[in-house]
Image 1 (cartoon, rainbow, N blue to C red):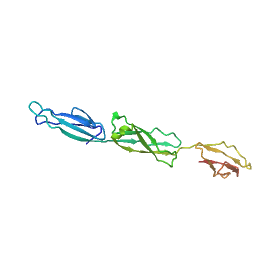
Image 2: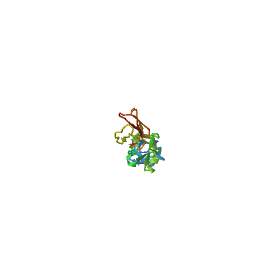
Image 3: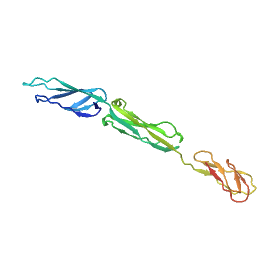
Image 4: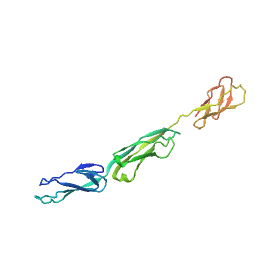
Length: 212
């Protein structure tokens, strides 16, 4: 047997010492005694003939059959990652074992999803052109795609001075993640609800922390 794309040499000799002609049929091409398998299915029949001459009769034809095998090949996706909220990167990978002349190429994509909790997603490949793939025994190797947590920044509204006895007032802050912000304080001069309503309890400084 011989795999698609492989080459092998054939040779034979006659008891007459006359040159033996080699021809082939089936899933192959041959240049002289060098045979190249052109398919991953079927077979190649090698025929040996010697026509004889004035001193020797033609020799009986001898044949050998070589079974065609699919060529082993693989495509392997590269692992990748992105930060939550970012655009997906261009996915890449590598091909191994394909003949250059077949023009096999891969496009890579991943399973759907945009959450950190849903990671890892799976990157896989699709090969083209489809017809030529019938001559290969292809292994498809996938890879993981991870989405990592994103950083966020809180913007706190400006706070002015207050006097003990003033009415309660609200403070505001926003996160660029659009997630809700809560408020707290450990200062004895004031209290604040998680929603940002501040009460002045005494003279002194009041430090309010905005958290997400």
